[in-house]
Length: 373
Image (tube, helix red, strand yellow):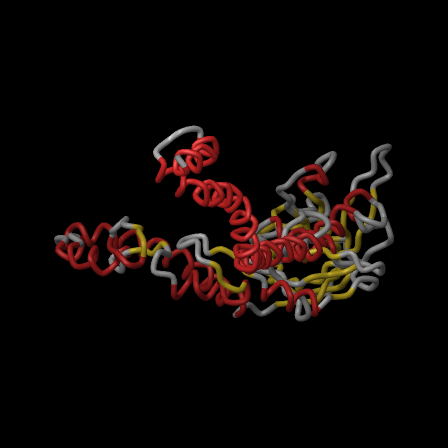
């Protein structure tokens, strides 16, 4: 009976069950309550136990994120204010410290020259010129240490060593077969080069096939040789004159003025001459064109008694670094035909043209050879 009475509270605590179960359940129920509470405690505990572990993981990710953010901030701070890209070579700054890469700086000066305006900084509109702006060596050094992706293997390297990696070290860089000179068109990653060259069929070409390829190469060399032989032949002439010429910028008197260049009068071979030059053949808005060229003409200012047959060529001056290919021009000067046709100044590309336009003056060297019959 006592057991039954004892069981009643136990059974009521468990909602029914054997006596033993009720006796065991009493503490068990407390245990269950404890267990029910414990998950919550454990969540807290697990949370408290996980918290010491979690923050380091978060801190690691946070640091990586911070490094990425820092890199992005550096990119945004050190980029060129014109093209918004990181400079690849020299970095110039205006008087207020805004940065410009060398290409954009030269382009701004060239555009201002074409539009007859004072070049200004795109950010603060202060005046810029080669005398007002200076290079920022600290930024150049900082940019050279920033990571950049290799365009072949996509691995990151400091920008200062990226060119060497891409041209000499990268196993995925594009290369050509060593038998290219005899007609092999293969191009592929460097790590496949040795396998290709081992199987390349071009070394086994017949003599007739090789003769055709060598003929094309000979024609190219023949043209170069002909140019230099012509120059050497002109240097053997009796009457040769040369001088440094300085093209200065002027504007036409038209309603829409155009930029042109002209040299002061100079004397060569006892005759007075003038050189003129124009941009994009006097195009209306050359500043809107990406492709820019300079063409020039030679004008005889003296009066002559008889026709004066001359060959002439322009080369870079002693203090300029512009790249000009030698091209020989020919003209017979007289009182009626004292001007040559405009001929393209043989510079390599628009970048070189912008360098000339950005300069205060264009300094070149003129050679004139008088042909005597």
